[in-house]
Image 1: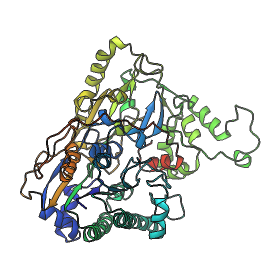
Image 2: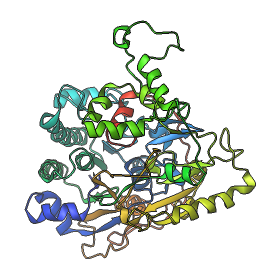
Image 3: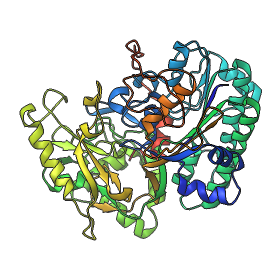
Image 4: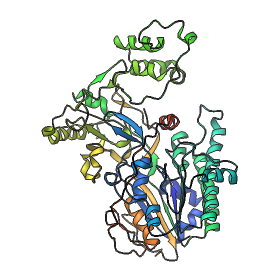
Length: 538
């Protein structure tokens, strides 16, 4: 193996250094000690589904086409998949050069391309994803005894500490699958990604022992891979960092509603196919008798809609339920349709602009000629965008400090043939201490205790690496050209990064125009529910 790329989701020095100091991660520490290391600046927005494609294509989202966990078609959404990545990946560059690759657990890689080697997709794939070559997942499962993409959910048969054991088992599965496939295909390039180094902070915030346990297991797997594959060069990289949030959850749509930009509605009319996770419909007995014929809507949903009509919306009701200690019970047992019927919701068609997904980190204008029911005239685009930039730039917390450190036109960070699919302006929270929400109701709430930070890590080690190289200023977009350089391949001139100074790189060159796969729908309810569990769908 010429090059091994190890992906550690959300890894950063504030997390790694204490573990290095305590001797918990001897194998990863050896890579960092023997090689060139540095902070790795992530992109804007620094979220998994968009950042990993940026890392393995070397291009900003406007060039590869993935901006979020969700793909939007007008006011409707679907979960992104590999057909939304419309630029060459590292393993496709390698394949074009006649090199073999093994890729295990990389996010947004299902369905995979046909390459010389093997691809077992990761995050956002289904639990039984299409793999390449066909049938390889069955072989992996036979070899390991089992292989899963996801841990069991809290609603499944295992929960609590038992569920956390699944996290450790998933790390072992990644390592075992990679070693098996590397032995079988003998690749020049290998890429294995570990996702639970991120999810542990979302699911168990503040539980440092669980963080330590996950990283120990990942380190053990990395050590076994290094011993068996003996790569010439090792690159360790993360898509973003992780840290505590000490600010607020800022509900952008509520702020814009008060400014007259966002329009809202109740009765579920503002969510045509938005955040709709399939309800298990109440049985006739649970409804308390026969349906009374009101469009076939369950009784609870109709009662919730009636409550909304007199001002008892979900947002107000939730506060009461929390005081009574019933919020969790209702959240688990009340159908989603009932919640939406009693909720103020963004009326996307009537609004001038809105936040459609928090992890896009920006606002989309409802533009005539581009959006199905656009209300902002094309000639007013720049004026309205500047107006909203000004509004958000002046947003302050309850303490009187700025919510955002910058609010800018998307072109500052996102550019390329697919940029028009992105938000129109980006809003970067101050010190990434505040999270964004698309909900309406109260303007501020409590943020998730731990969430993404823009400073990840990178390390390069190997005989051909200058271990004294200064990696100051390393960026997410630099990883792909660096990996190509270690394979003796020229970076593409369309890439937005450069090979890092620790390796010798050929001059960038142009490649034939990329022919992306036809976009496919994900339509996987289980994946949607997992995104909802992590807070990526509200």
